[in-house]
Image (tube, rainbow, N blue to C red; front, top):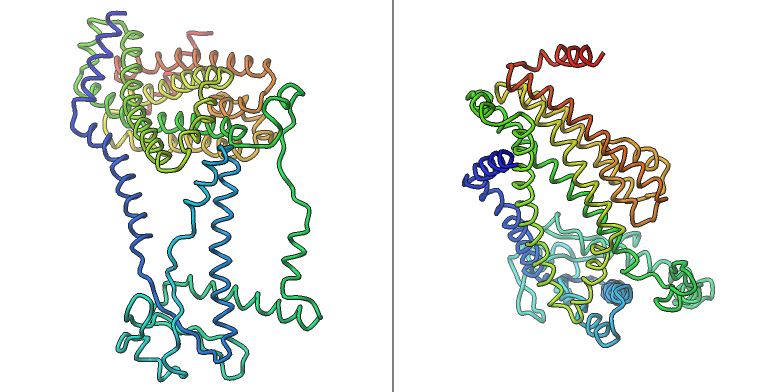
Length: 462
């Protein structure tokens, strides 16, 4: 164990002492912080624009303004629905709903300063200004009915901002429906009244009588949190394996080209060398992931602290993460999956002399890693899919899919059997990878000699 520790300490310190490691460690949260700040700043700093409608009767202008009001109400309803799923106390739920009021309007209706497009041209091109609630501004857009009355023309100097035109199009469709209802002798709110009278479809989860008496049956975030946590663990494993490729490949190539293996193997045995290196890379990637995880957790705490009753938002996720039925199989799958993929990459890296040779391996490695990502996506959408059931028995998919299946209470015999298959596969890969690593690192075998290495291994076995 001492030799394993010495190899581990040597490699781990070699990675973390490099300035590039700390630069890459800080880059992700820094870019996320900059990106989030930029997005918030862009949304808040978006200018308020004036628009006008050439409409003496005021029908079209009223319809567009009513559509904006409906959008604001829909945003408030989404906030209320979100608050309802969070299972917050009534006072916190009311505060959350009031705190999610519609944002400031970005388009304000002003009286049209002229009735023709030629007369409005100076206002639209910024040569003349119109008065409004926020002072004098140029006219951003104007709506003018066509001469034949078949369309409401949208004129603007900016062809990229389409939000105002989209709202107007929705308003015209709604106005046409109201006219059709009026001609049929029905009220303008007929469709809204019909929708209001429709049967609601609330979501309930079937439980035992005891559970239903204590926790109720309505679906809340506590019911969905285990799926989100399992999905996060599966993606975390994938991201961690994806991150170890460069460390394993580059480190192995450097030591092989500099003949460092020969020196190391005079002091330690090959299994000790492999164990120490694998643990070192695991510790390096764990350091990165833990740092990013703490950053994400701190950001979540800060975000929820800005919401009334926000502290209770994280409790379902923390409870799901602490659930032994999820975390224990998740940790076992995590470790076995890391060993399987880590040994594959380390063995292949030992056969490369140059970075160019390693780059030829990156494409098949990327394909090997993208397949589990596709499986994760399918399992997250439909964990009961037959494809997921079959793929979960394939060892390269099992570490990810077993984690995702745990919130859905798969049969215990399947969980144990899949863990056993993972363990046997990990042992087989460990045995093969050790032989390949010895051939590459000690005896100088290359990529072209891989077929011969397998033949010798199978020959000895026979």
